[in-house]
Image 1 (tube, one colour):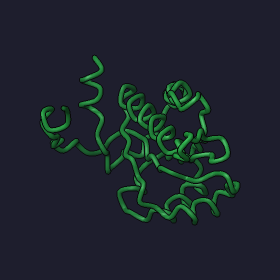
Image 2 (cartoon, helix red, strand yellow):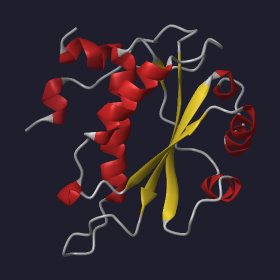
Image 3 (cartoon, one colour):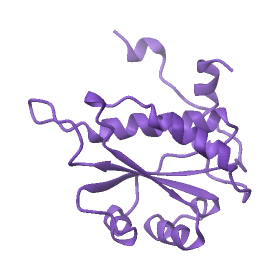
Image 4 (tube, helix red, strand yellow):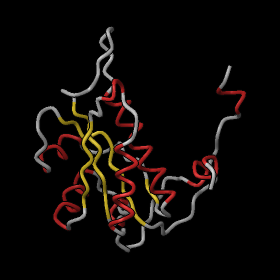
Length: 165
């Protein structure tokens, strides 16, 4: 599939089959993440793979939604603040960098026949404590990942003329 088809096929999945993700697919996806661009190539991120039942129970405490609990695997994408590039005017780029890498993850997963969803509305402090993250690490995004058990809804998008000048 071409890139436009890939982008159109990616959606926010909210129901997953219990089927485990093949290790080779997960490695491929993470390799795509590794090559995501970042400011000054600092790569100020950490991607934690959550597969064990104990760790799944922890992440579900941070975002308690029925649909979220259906995912067989989760990824916690964190910003490493002591590694992020800071522009001369003081703007930190860690959140931008991790967002680019997360979208690489989501698109690579879609290419591999898997589904994902960005989850940002979670208890970050609880996550940090439950997973024993160091002070410099901030969990930014949860990504449930697996085989879809739902169908994408129609994507409403602004017209091209509305977003360009």
